[in-house]
Length: 287
Length: 190
Image (cartoon, rainbow over all chains, first blue to last red; front, side, top):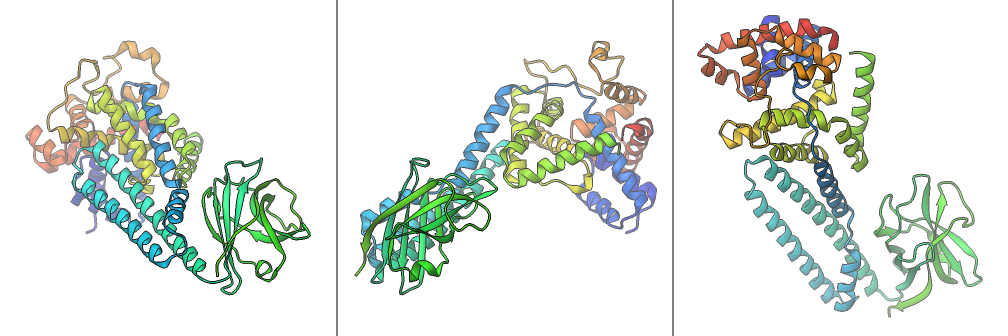
């Protein structure tokens, strides 16, 4: 339907005052999609007038408590997003008997039950959503948080299964990494299976790297010489897993340990930055 | 759009882009920049301070969750934010299904303002606000009523027709002529 300028102005005016029905609104935006410069100008000016109307109201300032509460809510959401429960899962895995396929299955089943419960709870929450604006927003927020948790748990299950599978093969070496003075809270493990060409790094409590730097992995040989093994963490993650793509590790027979340093993003041949994680202790070699 | 407005639009668009990247600081900067105006609009509509604060908080949470996304057709993020705040406040009073009365914490403004109605406000107004109030004072009582009932009370064209006992088409024409007057008077501020 082609609108005359007069009809278009009528629709714009009602839209600007928020009084348009959805059908008329669709008609208005259909007309705007025609890229008519005059229509665009009328629309822009009319909507601009309604924005000016807002400035006619008595100015009031919300209490500082509103911002405090908002900050609290946003931070709790942000923390939930970045929260990684690997440490907790790792403890459960170890107590169940790491390396046993039956336990791996039970462990996965346990996590699936948790996920189903979370999804179920999210569904119940969804059903309870009323038209009330604030309740709707809160529920939306929770749903998003649960979805993110589910996605994170799913990724962690995949990684744990990979590690459990790796541990079933003979000759898998495990190096325990501990935090240095720079990062005493840090910890990690490196799983190496030379037959399967597989090297996995698991890390926890590694501070987020500044934008111009990244973490690098070094092999410490028996001669105590550091050998470069590549950049090793995903961006902005403090806890997580990483697959190390470096043939040097698989070919190197005199590995004494590993260390992780924070280095500038450039070609480096020797470690220059602080050590964040290191470890020489090989704790397990499966048979 | 004036140079000053263009600069403000660029700042807001930059902040919204940063919010989309989950930068909390950007959201709080947006709050600092716009919370007073948004809260004033919401309070004008819901007329209760505590309700207005909850609605305001939900506006920013919805922006953070991206359940409200910037409507680029509006060009100006501040105008979009004001529209989101207005719509959420209207949704709130529609949910209540009863007209709001000012609560014990008195909210004085109950109708479109005239400069002459609030001589005490004159000293506190910016020249821009003063010009807006002068333009509004040039409208007829009926035209002010149309703005009050549509923009600040959330009535649709059909509901306005019922309220004013007029045909829908007549209401549309009256709204257009009201907005035409304001567009002419306030053109230099757009």
